[in-house]
Length: 192
Image (cartoon, rainbow, N blue to C red; front, side, top):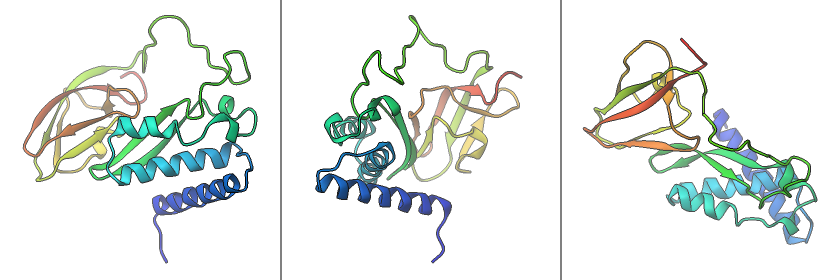
C-alpha cells in the first residue's frame, strides 16, 4: 500500500492514541508523547466530523485531566498544534494548556511580559484581495503562504514577495464562491 506522508503521520498519530487508550484502560498514567497523540487524534476526529473550531479546542482540553498524566506533563506541554482535516479543508488547530494550566512557578512555566505582544515584529504588512473564482468555499489558514493556495483563489498583492495572512495561529479566513475579500497580510521571513 502506498501512503502519502500526511497519511503516514495520521496513522502514526492514531497508533499513539490507541496506546494511550490501552494504558488508560488499565489505570496507567500517560507520558507526554502518548497524551499528545491522544488529544491530537481526538482533534482530528472531531474536525473530520465537522465540529466548529472553537468547540474542538474546548473539547480537546477535556480529553485528559492532570491525574491521568505522569508528573510534569502539563508543564512540558504548554500548548499543542495539529493540522486537522475539516470538511472545508485543512486547518491548524492550536490548543493552549491542553492538560490544564501548569503550576505558575513550576518547570516549564511560561511567564509572558506585561502588555501586548506584537506578532511578527518588524515584518512588512500590507492588504491583499482574495477572490474565489471556483464553485466551492475556500478556506485560507493562518500559516499557508499565499502563493501556495488553491488555484481557484485569485490573490492580488500590492507588492512582490511571499506573504501569509496576518492573523493568529490556528485561524482561517473563508472565501465564498464568487466572493471578493480584503485581508491583512504579513511578509514571510522578515523585512523586504
